[in-house]
Structure formats: C-alpha cells, structure tokens
Length: 115
Length: 190
Image (tube, rainbow over all chains, first blue to last red; front, side, top):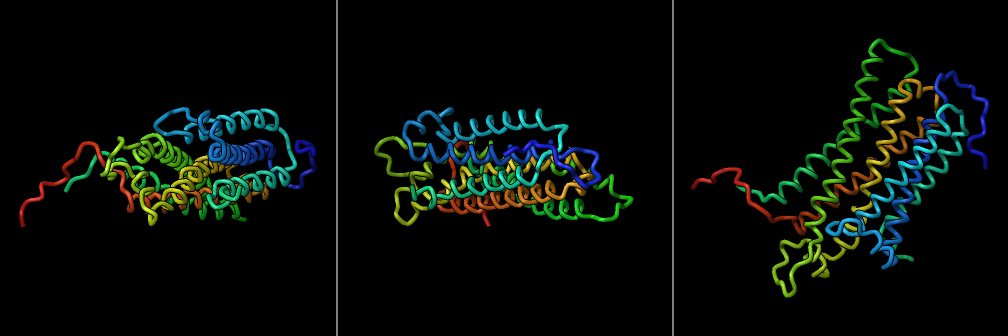
C-alpha cells in the first residue's frame, strides 16, 4: 500500500494535505502504542517491571513515556516526509481511526481480561 | 472548614484541569464543526480563527497538565502501599478499595480503565490543535482532514469524560487525603 503516492486533487487548497495526514496518522500510532504497552504491562510481569520508569507511579510511567516518545518520533518522521506532499489521506485516516478504535478496545478492562 | 494538601491537589486536578477541559471540549467540537463547515466567509472570520487557535492551545495545556498531575502527583498517593499490619487504610485508597468485595471493581475496572484512557485526550487534542493551526480556514478544502479532526476531538472528549467520571466516583468511595491540613475558615460556634 503506497500511502505517499501523489494523487490528483480537485480541491482548491493552497496547503498540501501531507502535514495534516502525518499528524492524524501519528496520533493513531501513538494511541495504539500506548494501548499495546498497557496491555503488555498487564499481561507480562517482565514487561511490567521494565515499564516502571518512576517507582511511585509504577508501570503507568513507562507506558505513557514510551508511547509519547514513539508518537512524537513517528510524527516527526512523517511530517518531514509528507510536509509538502499530497497523500492519500482517506487511507491514512482509515488506518488512524482503526488504530484509535483498537486502542480504546485494548484499554477497556473487560476486553483486556479476555486474554 | 479545612482541606488536606492531597485533597486540594485532587480538587485542582479534577475540577481545575479535568472539568475545565471537558467544558472546553464541548465548545471546541461545536466551534470546529461550524467554523470548518461554513460556506460563506464572514467579516469576523479572521478573529474567530485566531480565537479558536488560542482556545485549542489552552486546551492542549489543560489536557497535558491534567494527565501529568494525575499520574505524577495524585496517582502515587492513590497507589501507596501501607506498612505491614495496617488496619486503617484510609490513607491508602487503592488498598482500601481492594480490601472489600463491594468496592474492588472501582479499582480493577474504574481506575485501570481511567489511568490509560485519559491519555488519549491530550494526544488527540494536540493533533487537532496542530492541524487547525497549520490549516485554519483552509480545512474547508480538506474534507477528510476535517472529518478526522472532528473524530479525534470527539474521542478526546469521551476519553476525558470516562477519566473524569471514574475519577470523581473513585474519589467518593476512597478519597485521596493526607498531608498537611489547610484551614479554609475558622468555623466558629453557632
């Protein structure tokens, strides 16, 4: 799937959509990273110990710090690559919203307890 | 009338940052929708756009301050471990909730959901603010970006709502308290 493929756009915008698509997709990736790390911390004692960056806050500190760093790193890379491009934003939006939906599911305790 | 330092911080986190963010979110949803869907430009548009940019930046600050004070100021007090043999668990809210079958789900469901879902709010609203600042009224020409921005704003609102509701209910069951006591009024005899 080539997300960064230039497409013909019928709109009259002066600003390419790449920057917006990068922000939206990276927000989806960051949210999903947070959910996966939270899930891992809940299911694995090793992961739980590794994610304790600040003892009083416990694994929450590692889960959120790691996810935020991953989100910002992904955003920086995508912004750098897509800033001046027009991308297939329908696809990036779909991926971002699917990741966001999965994130909401993976942080909902009854779903986590199914595994 | 008095309040403990921990109680005051909980109040600042919940009512000061969290509740204010929720109020702001409902306003942002309406304003973003109407601003980015307007067909005819109006004379007040540049002012509205500038205002909305500042409004979203304020929301970003509120959202991050809310989750950081929650995670690094209040949560350590919530999950503090009592000394062995402690009978009075009133200063250890998590242990107090887990000590009774009638309250354990406030922790195992409520807090475990709240502690992670809350973080989707600042991540989402930061993206929304960035996209709006970058595109402004040009978002009208980007229907798909506009839709995603509104979806993420809605998710941010819902995530903050879940965190806020459970935060208030959990604090009602097992309040975070302790630390120095601050006298708010003398409380003379009546």
